[in-house]
Each structure stands twice: as C-alpha cells, then as structure tokens.
Image (cartoon, rainbow, N blue to C red; front, side, top):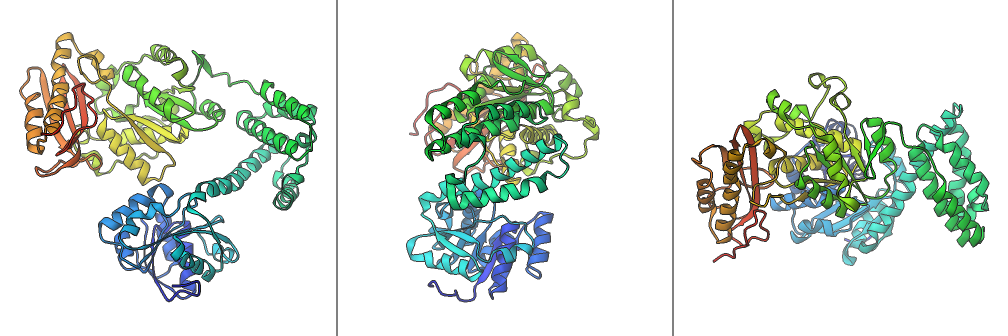
Length: 610
C-alpha cells in the first residue's frame, strides 16, 4: 500500500467511544466497510446505532478477526492489555492494520499485534470529539499525528488524507512531549476560563462568557501567531502592585485555593517569558517572584486542623479545597484507622511514588456483614494522627477523616447507587462475607473520586481486595494506577492487622498457624513443588489446629482468583483465612510454582528449586 487511496478495507472498531465511532463513520463514508464494533455501555451502543447504523455489535476478538483494519480506540491504559488479549485469542494476522488513537503512546503498545504480523499505526487526531455526527465535518483539515515504522508510514498518511485530515509525521520518542503540550494547552485553557467565569459571577457579572470571549479569542490568536511577543497585562509590564491586588481579590473568592494557585503558577511562567522577551528586567522579575512566593494567600477553611504539619479535614468541601493546594503527582492510602506499622509502610510507599500523599481514615459500614464486627472495630483517630505525624518527612500532606453521614448523606441503607463487584469477588472472602466487596468497591470509588489521586496504594495482604480494586480501576478506565505494597509482619511472622489487637494472648499464639502456613507454601514452591505439594504442606499447618477455625487455604490465579489446577505453573497467590479467638484473620503470599521465588514476605530465606 502507498500514500494513494487505500483499497476498500473491512474495518472493525474495538471500543466504540467518541473517537472510534466517528472515525469508523468517516471511513465508511469514503467507501470502506465497517464489519463490526464492540462496546457494552449504553453510550457506546447509542453511538453504534446512530453513527454506524446496521453495524453488528460483536465481541472484540470477533471484531478483529473480521477486519483488515482494526481501530483499537480504547482508553490509553487499556491498549496493551486489550491488544494482548486479542492476540492471545488469534484475533490478529499478518498484513492486518492495527491502529490506535492515543496521543501519548507510539506503536510499542501494539507489540502483541506486531508480533502476530500486523502493521502497527499510532494515529492521533489533534481535536476534541463529541461523539456525534458534528465531528465528521470537523475532521476536514484537522491535523493527525502519525507514528509508524518508516516502511508503513504512507499507510497511516493515506488513511488520514482519505477522511480529510492533515497527516503530521511524528517520531515515536516525541509522542510523550507532543501529547503533554496539546493537553497543557487545550485542557488547562478550559480550566482557566472556568475559573475566570466563576470569579466574574461572584463579582456580579451575569454573562462572563460574553465578556471573556473577545479578549481570550484575541489572546489565543496572538499567541499562535506571535508567541511571547503577544504577552500583555500587568505581569508582562512588571506591575507588582496590580499583581498584589489580584492576589488579594482572589483570596476572597469561594474557589480561592484552586484559582489562586493557578494564578500564581501561571504568573511565574508569564514573568519568565516576559523576561526572556526583554519585556521586563531581571530585577522586576525577581520582585514579582518574591511577591508570588510570599503573599499570604487565602486562609485554610475553618474546619481544617493540623497534626504534625499534616492538614486534617472532615468534610468533602474542605477536602476539595485542601486537595486543590496539592500540585504535582498525588497518591492516596485508604485506611479504616487503628493504624499500625503496616499502614505506615503504605504511606512510605506512597511517598516514593508521588509528590504529595493523602491518607483517608474511615470505618466503612457497608463492608461489614456482622453489625457486631462493625461495632467492635477500633476507632483511634487521635492515635492514628500521632502515628502519621511520627513519620516526619514521610508524613502525609493531608488526612481525610469523614463521618458516616459525610460519606453516606442519605443514610447507609438509602444510598442511590453503588458499585457491584464482579466474579472475582464471589469466591473466598466474597463467599464467606456476602456483599463485602460491593461495600469495599463503593467506598473506594467514592474516595478515589473525592481525592483524585494519580496513584492509589494498597497492601498485598488483602490480596482479593487488591484484585477487585484493580479490576474496577481497569473496567471503569479510572485515570490512576494501583501500587501494591508487600505484606507487613510482626517479628514472629504474624501478618499485621488492626484486628490483631482483639486477640487474647493464647489466640495470638494460635494465629501464628496462618503465617506458618504461608512459610510452608513458599518453602515447597521454592523447592520446585507442584500445586498439590504446596497445598498439602500449607494446609497441614492450619488444619485441625486448636483454636483455629479454617475457612479456606488455596492457591489461586492473582487476577481471577480461580483455584489453581493441579498442573498449573507460574505466578500464583496463596490465600488463607481462619477465625481465631472470634476474630477473622487472613494471610497471603505471591509465589511461583515451578520456579524460584524472588521475595519472601514471611521472613523465610528464598529457596532455590532443586
């Protein structure tokens, strides 16, 4: 194929979102045949019905098998996993074109398709999509960044030209900077204008958009044609007094924290540009910097307390205001309080992964099946804050400690909606505690929405919880990644848990059977034992032990939590649960059956396979 019009292709759309459905419709208008589309949400099905009338809705693998050109228009973070799944099912073939539309990624995320012999293309339309027929006319003249191996670049260019776009060749290594630049300009422009409109509304201006329109359109045109020479306003003139007045005025607005932070950050950047353009002197730029750094800004909301330098908020409104002050990468650690060294280890892990850390402390009633268990759960907020403060430089920036009414304002039993866990949650803990994971996922989803993190840190001890949370994050395309921290243990090997405090001295001794079971599983796996041998040794440590009522002890696959078959090998997870002294305890360890183990959470030395 060359840069002339491609031959008539059968086109399949994996992920009929706003972009996929529109591009599929555009390709059909120029003579290609759309043979299938995948999409399970009501919005996707509506788009297929409206923009791709008559196109059958198929499973993603069937879509790929039927197509010469596969549009892989799924969320950015799902591209590799979806491509790997389709490849594993034989959905790709030599000579087939597989195209994704992510701006951030090049063709490397399509490696599973490339290994199957397909032609990989990364084609990103530099425009916003509504997912309606209005987008079709907007494709005309729109720039499309095309990244592909040199021999097949003409294929991507030809497809873009055919639907009316303007192809721009982009090196694979440049995709990250390219996408950051486009997102910075388009997304943050919207944020600025929304903030400006809100400030105007508070000032009594009813139609802020009409007031801002001519000014911002002229500024946009000037920036695109003249760059930094188009700068105007008090910062570009070095007018320190006016900038100080702006900061004073913004400090009194309802959205003072977020708007003030944005004004300061962009004023700094504007001063640098103005200095580079020779508009202001170095001395005046330094004076502006001092003002922006030292101006007191808005006070924290009255409900915000501090503990060892950590802000503590109790309401969603105060959380939103305090969260706006945290620039850069943010990690969240969710807890139910009664903090121990294991929780503090999660906070330390979060600190290594982000610029700022938020810890939530909330005893969630919807994940307790037994009201007595909920009532007995320890509430130790004062001690928890002291423990977090003891972390020194690793202490969190913000603690969110809401009450039940703040998280469930309509009442626990009257909430309008919630998250229902999938099949992974119906086994083991889910079977023993019906509804538990529905409650977990509902509160996790709420807290992720409220804290808006880039990273969420969970412990590996709650292995099934980790699996269902990861599944929810992937299924709902949440813009974050989940970091798992290893199991934290007491000196004698017992997995740390807030529930351990409820054990009697004799129960505490009996509970060590669970950690001995974990050690046995790792020892036998490390020695090359198969599934049957590992389970025999692990179960022997907890079966029939006085005071230990075993619920389960099994080897499972990490993502599905299906029991491992006797001939299964590779990475598996050992899980064990029992009731000791009236307290439900769990333990776990990742291990490799049929290979060496890389880490020992139970404190045992690694054992090489014989």
